[in-house]
Image (cartoon, rainbow, N blue to C red):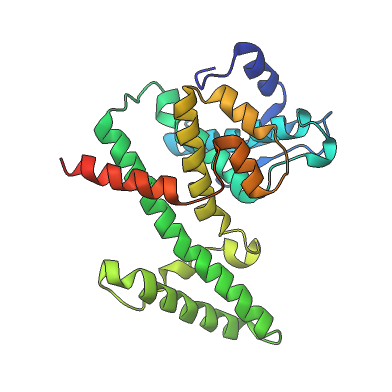
Length: 261
């Protein structure tokens, strides 16, 4: 309800979500049929939930709310879901970005809004490099189907260095860093990492639309109920424009001017 969902819709969503303790950091598992509930998992320490557990829980709740609407309220059951993983990540990012407000600790002003935009831009820039490594590593594996684990490891480190040197060394002034190769998602969840930078772009476009509408809840529900259509069609229906980095880039430029005042 703090996010602008009418009380009846908030209760409807709550009735479709079960909260479980997580052994790891957190996870959202959507239901596969309308008679089942989605599961929200987040870590709760022995001393109670700390901020990290809450922050993750709010992100996973975003997934669960999307999963509830996109399963139970789409026009046709075959359209269940969203266009791809980047979209559900984007909708979860929208929730996660409200965590401080949900705790009653946020009172954003022009400066804090500018800093949030710069943080969003930086997070997108950072994870985009990891996504490029992920994509290149999978290209390499298809080109070397007989590769041994050690060869894959060496190739991954070399790819990480090359992408770092091209896109990050000019900014940081240091070459041959292998940090972009650290993500375990890379082999465990194939081609998942590119969904994060694209998800950040989508999230920013969605948030801009929600600001125009003056509320998160009704707009979130409207978007989540569109179903698994093509990405640009989904985004055009949601915001009036296809998926694009332009909204984030323009806002980042404005934020830099605000931060330098």
